[in-house]
Amino acid sequence: MDQMTSEVIELLHQSRLPPGDTIPEGVSEDDIIGFEKRTGLKVPPRLRSWLRTSNGPCAGAGGVYGIHPKRHDLDIEYTLGLRPVWIELGWIPIAGDGCGNEYCVVTRNEFGDGEPVIFIETLEGENTPTYVVASETWHFLRFYFKADLGLTEWPFDKNEVVNSDPNIAKFNSATLPWDA
Image 1 (cartoon, rainbow, N blue to C red):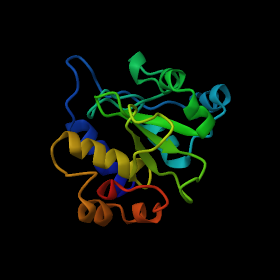
Image 2 (cartoon, rainbow, N blue to C red):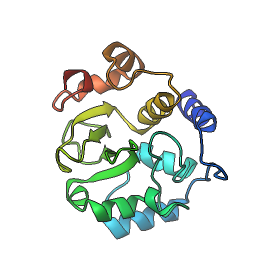
Image 3 (cartoon, helix red, strand yellow):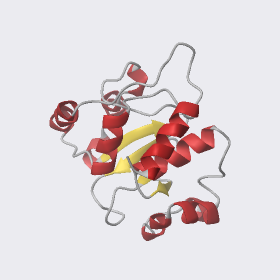
Image 4 (cartoon, rainbow, N blue to C red):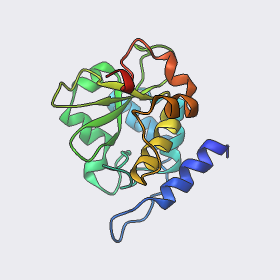
């Protein structure tokens, strides 16, 4: 296990969970393949790795999504059913902000090579990213859990974000939070 994965798992274990909830185990590779067949979306490597680590924990501001997790409202496919345009765009919802807005992993390189995570303020439009918040899933999760614990000024502190996630700067074809 690398340092980033260890840090994310440690932050997850520090997260406030609803009473009676536990951190769920990850899903199998067969579960991920089944999701890909049902949705037509290819799960990128880092999101795939996360889903094998934990599937739909009710942690962070609005919970992290999974493949048929215990909580229906944290189901990626349920969320895609509410916003089918994301299937067309190749965006996989990964988490909510607790206020009806969503974070999605971009799978088709429209902002450059990689698998950046975007924030979508849904009242502004569900098919327009508000800004890129991380260069990939593991950086996103680290920021997301740290923010919920009050340990970061993510995503708006440019120095902190770029120092922690230097690859975010390569997605300059999309708006970055400090430029919004």
